[in-house]
Image (cartoon, rainbow, N blue to C red):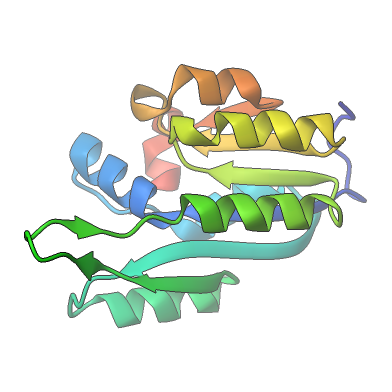
Length: 165
C-alpha cells in the first residue's frame, strides 16, 4: 500500500456509538472528535467525514450532533428502536459498510474509527480493491482481527489527553 502523502484523498467514517461506549467504559470521558478528525486526515485532502450516530432522545444529543457538524462531520442519524420485549437496537454496521465500499472508489484511504471486529471483512475487501484502510480505536476494546485487517492502526489509548475530553 502507498505511504501517506498530502495529495491522498481520505474519507473518515466514525462509529460514534462504539467510540462512545468504549471511551465511557474505559475512561468515563467523551471522545474529542476534532482531534480524532485531525489525526485521521493527517494533512491529506479530506473528501468526506461521516459520524454515524444514534438518536436515543437524550437531552444533550442534539447539541452533540450540531458540534459534529461544526467540526466537519456529516452526522448520519438513526433512531434507537425499542422492541415489544423492551430490547433496544441501533446498528449502523450495514450503513458504514455500504458507505465505505461506495467511497472506496473515490478516495485513496478510508479511516474507520471503531473497534468493532465485524468490520474486519470490510477492511479486507477495501484493501483488495486498492484503497488504503486505516483504523483508529482503543486497543483494549478493538478486535484483533480488525487491527490485522487494516493497513495501519492508531491506538487512541496511547494519547488520551489528545483524544478524550
